[in-house]
Length: 199
Image 1 (cartoon, rainbow, N blue to C red):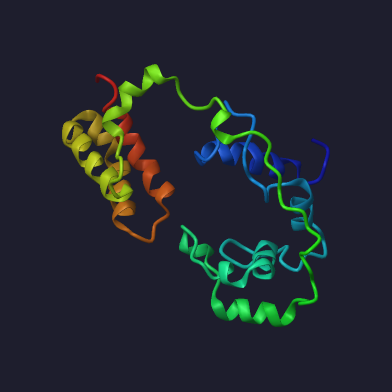
Image 2: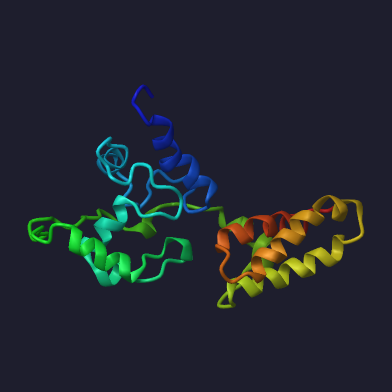
C-alpha cells in the first residue's frame, strides 16, 4: 500500500471491477490481459505524454492498439465515447516509429479453461430470477419492458414516490441508444429488485 498509485491500482483491479459487474468477488481470476502492473506503471510514468489526458481523450492504450492493428483501432467500442477517429489514427501512425516489430513477442498463454471456474450463484437460486432471463431479446428493450411491468405495481404507492426519480432516469437512459448499457441498467435494477420481494 506504500507504493505511489496504490489506491488507483486497487480500484482498477478490484473495486471498479466488482462494482461494474464485470468481475465478482467470489472469483480469484479475471481475464484482463491489459490490466497488469507494468502497463499501469507506464500510464503513471512522468514522461507519459498522455498523463494529463481526461475522460474520453486519447491514452497510451490507443497508441498501442493503433500500432498493433490500425483497422482494429478504428472498430467502434461498445461505448462510443471511446471510439478512435480515423484521422487521429492516421496522425498517430505518422508520428509513431513504424520500425517497431512484434515478431518476437510471445502470445499470452492461458492455462486451464474459463468454464472450470466455479463462479456465480448456486443453481438453486436461479429459479428465483428465471423471469428476468431475457434470452435472445434486445437487452435495452427487454429491460425497459420489464421495468414498465414492475413500475405499474408500485406507481402511486409510497415506494413508488421514493423510487420515481430512479424510474425516470432508467427510462431516459434506456431510451437513449448512445447511453452505455451498464449506466442505463443501474437505476433500472433498483426498480426490478423491488419486484423480487413482498412489500
